[in-house]
Length: 93
Image (cartoon, rainbow, N blue to C red):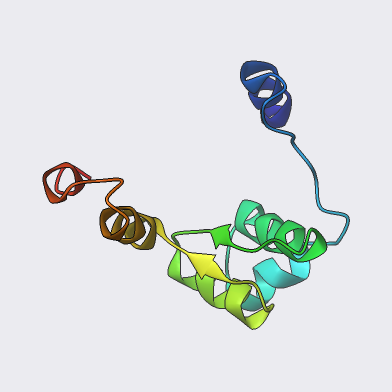
């Protein structure tokens, strides 16, 4: 139900895709939520370059699945290094 609301709100600029695989095994193995497990499955299925995920157990599960991950701090750090975000702006986040 929420996915349909999100899809309606974002229009055509983001495509919502459900993974084909079963996420329950990842959830039980790593103690993560279904959304995190589905994100990991989808990243593998799409051969994604990177998965943005903050939760430590989710990052561990993704890395074990062969998915490259980055969290919020990593994104902020990258943006600062590339002069897309100043140090003053960074401190607000």
